[in-house]
Image (cartoon, rainbow over all chains, first blue to last red; front, side, top):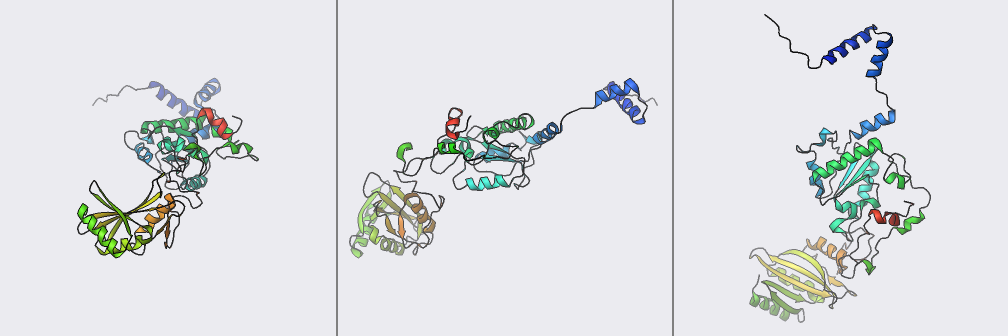
Length: 221
Length: 169
């Protein structure tokens, strides 16, 4: 019986396979060895390699605040499946997570809880403020709510009310870009931060400029 | 709902038992409402409970500023057998916002009274545990009063970020 061989899809592959075998046997020498090394070794820095891995494997925290959480759940479902990018492992404990997605409005009573959860997360950690409510308080701009920038550092704001799942996926991809390329940007400049640790240097006299309406102050009514 | 006549009969009966306990009635859009004096409110609710209104659906506040007396407390009572509802309303001033508690008659009014206290500052005399329920413990003021500012915080945008955060941005 005659055996029919399929033509090789990539003849170069077979050639490289044989070349690698020769190299391992120690049969490659001189210029051929030099060429082999040039073609097969990739040089980088440890920092770049680590941030590449870090940006491709966020573990978001299972933490829903309001209606935005419904959209947050959608991004792990079939249509937008962020497992494609390596972000699908929603962890149930802040100790295991490195991405906090604030999905909804944060009330004055909830803010210390959110801050505590953020503090419990291990370095390096990132935060996304999702939706109008926790970025600028949106339609609920009243006595009960507080914007997330006031009590924790936020890496990416995703606008919308609520943002579409595509928008959140885009926000996470922007965060990946930031982690892999320009990690020093954003709030880190403002807080003189190192990595994801915020450092408040000295007495911040300018913080008196943060204006908050006080009870009985009718100017904003 | 008691109809308009039934409401008048209830008001008349309560008025005979406790003079000056009922200050008025109103029957609008099929909703029967008794206006009661704060001093005798507890007895009025107790009488209505005996009449079969055995469930308090809601206790809530209202601010009628600039009318006087300013604050209102509204009790929605329900007769579950006849599916019959009646509203009892009392008005108190913002300076002396004292209303007797009905927690001994309806234990379920506990959280409702605490919320009314939290949002409007109405003090329920005799309530065993009158604390804030929704706002933080150290919050100042009662946010649902109409002279309370709408509040919120100035929204941060790129153009005012430097001003709000101060730093040399």
